[in-house]
Length: 419
Image (cartoon, rainbow, N blue to C red; front, side, top):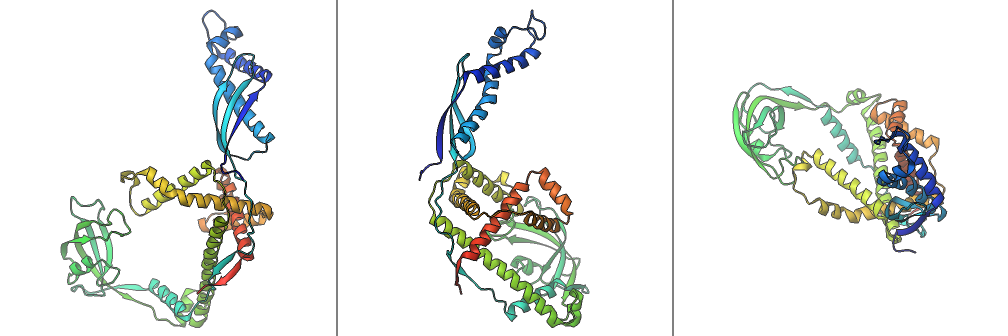
């Protein structure tokens, strides 16, 4: 098996094809050329060849090189990846055109035995304690906040305040309705310490030291001095867990019926997570089993996608990537190892899908469009039109085929119990 995806072709375009294309170009140039002493469209071809030699050469290359490269690649059954690098183009009147194309091809993959791969699998099991925890989360979501009479804030109170950094601090703007719970573990200690005992209408200034791993990167690791004005106090009231609570959440006749429905949905969630974890390990095992070269064109595209996702994640955390002094070449290099594995996984799964004749049916595509329509709260027809306009339908089909291939591998895998 070849250890590289790079190849080179020496391609020749017949002289008669070059001359025929030259005549076509000359006709186009002659129809629009304006030269002193000649009427439009009457400039001799010999003069056009001399005056527009550079343009003729450029047009010849544009018209003939892609055509003959593709023809030669098809004749040799080459699966070309990316765009070729064209070098040493030779063009002369009455002579064949010659050029050298440097390009990459998809690697040859000799599939190992991919059925029956051993993979750890954690059998999902929902406990009563987990159901109670989920029920308590729902109860928290349905809590109501009751305004309290003015008094000094104490632990457990929810303080409503306006908060703004003092001039010269980080540019966050003013928050008019920030709510913090005094003494709660999720509340930064400085807020609890400086707001404890404060009454509505009272103003306080204090510094807050944000931890290095704080979610908002503009605040992470910084110390900011704030001005806070207490606007009111609230108490959280939780609804009672009974049959009425269950009925308010849906068509449940009792609290026990609600719990059973929660158990079933949690079971499905755990099954999905367990299967995704097993599938990820399957893919890792598949990649480790196979050794083949990865085309640089595919690798660069994958690295670009990973860096783009990295930047989007930074922006979501409040950081402006343009203001960060990052060595982007180092960032890209750091993504290379994972990108190699991801590209290999994609090529392997595609090859397995081909061997197993795994295809996307019209029913598969329709189900996915309906799923996307529900997520986007749009009609299916609107989602289909958008994907077609964005030329993204191919990506959707590829994703469905990938998932079907992963499901096939999971079904064929030998699952070993995991604690």
